[in-house]
Length: 206
Image (cartoon, rainbow, N blue to C red; front, top):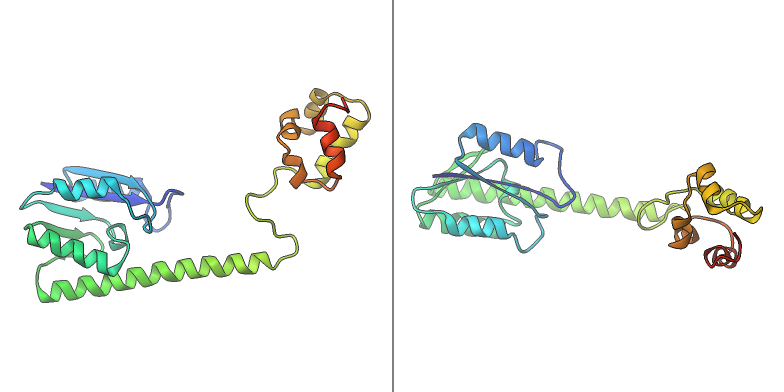
């Protein structure tokens, strides 16, 4: 029996052939009779679908993945998993490398490629962290998701409310609903004082 395993991170991966659709298509083209998919980051300890698949494999079966980084989180884990599969007479085929043979040369190739995959993942994480550090140095940097509305938009909406306009009418004109004010989101997006915001939220201003 030929089993395929495809994994993406929780935020999704669509570059370099890493999307679930592309992995599944490649595994199907190879001839996998059953394909198991999972959405977990490579640093997540628990991968229930992958663990279940490993337990399901029988002697003579083949486990296929598109790339080495879909298979293991680290060099040590990858080598250990492959050796355990070899001991159970299960073949391992990585499409962008080839069939990993249970020989000294095969183990050497596997270890080297796993080490490079782990190094590349570490480099990506390092570049991401460096990018965040640089971004935090910018005067207009804010943690979290970007504000939905600009301070000028919030200020304009409050001016309309101050003039006696209803929340519904303000929403029609600005696109900013009463719910936005009720949840307090405007406090992080506007330049008006919290006192003014609080007055609107509590209904002192129509």
